[in-house]
Every structure is written in C-alpha cells, then in structure tokens.
Amino acid sequence: AETVVQLLENDQTALESFRDGILNLSAYAQKIHPSVEKLTFKDVKKGTIVVALSRLSKKNLKVKSKPNIRIVHLSTRSPLTSFAYQKTPDTQRRVSTLNPYLVTSSDLFGIIEGESEIVIISSEKAVDLIKDHIGLIPKKEISGLVAITAQFPNNLGLNANALQALLSVLAAHKVSVVNILPTLTEISFILDKNNTEAAISVFNLYALKEKHEPK
Image (tube, rainbow, N blue to C red; front, side, top):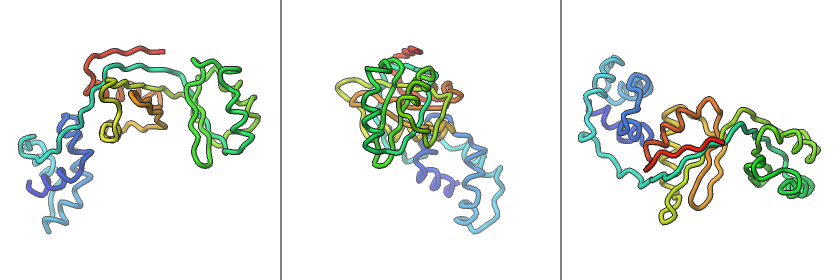
C-alpha cells in the first residue's frame, strides 16, 4: 500500500484524476504493476494493487494545491477542419488575404504560424475556398473537429498552471487535443468531435456556471 501511495503521489496526472474521482483503478493498476513489483522486490497480483487504490482516502495523499481555475463560460464550434502548409513568403501572403476579403470571421476560426508551418482552422464549408486560394496541397488535413472554448474571469485570465491542469485531466480521460488557440482570458481546444462530451465533462469540473453555446 505504501508503494502504491508513493507512485500515485509522484504521478500528477493520475493524482488529479484520483482527487476528482475519475481515475480508472484497474487501468492504473495495470500501468504501475511493474513498478510496484520492482520497488517491493516481490511478485504482486494486479488485484492487490486495485484493492490498495480503492482503500486510499484523499486524506492519505500529499496533494498539491489544485490550480485556481474558474471557467465562467463554455462554447463550442463545429464542424471544423485543420490543415497545415509549409511556411513560405508566398504562403504567408496568400494566408494574409483570407480574412475578411474571402472568408468571413465566422468561417475562419484561427491561423497559427510556427517556425516552418502555418496551420489554418476553419469551418468545413470554407475548406475548398481556402485551398483554392492557397493553391497548394496541405501537408496534413484533419476534418471532423470541434472547438471547445473556455473563458476565464478577466481579473484572473489564463496561466500556465491552469493550462497544464486542463491538459492533464483531458489526457486522463483519453481526450486527444489536436491544437490549442489561447488568448489572455480564454482558450480553445481543438478536438475530434467524438471527444466533445468527454471534454465538456472535464471543463464542467471547473465551471462556475454551466453555459454552453454551440455554433
């Protein structure tokens, strides 16, 4: 039992999930089974680890303070498509004329420029128009996406701890994040639409008031 506590306390993602009552004990026991046997120098049944986890109380764990995350508003936007292009001066020029001259703000959700790539996230109905305008075949294209935007109080905004905590809990729910679009007081998580319900259930753990506005 002491070994299980030690491993759990050193696994921040699992610890957060345990605190929120969403940790899959059987799956986590499977994950730490080799480590438990290594640390205890004995053969241990996986069922014994599950029992040890089930008997743990939050009071038995040295938990770090939960990040002060307060979501005041949630909204969703779908269906979206994400596609990436090699970053060149010509591609940058073509992308710069997309909005508002060709694609409306409601159809063009976001543009992310990295060192070598440009990622465009738009409504699916605007994809062909954008492709024709860029005139190149995207390096990668992902359709069937949804954007879930979480808004934070103006006096708090978004900080690194909040982002890390939200990404950790999403990972614990096996929700894969395709991309993120952060601003000062909100962040949009771009996900596969099949993960929408699971992601919203995560964000509701931190929501002051449940406000969903699908678009």
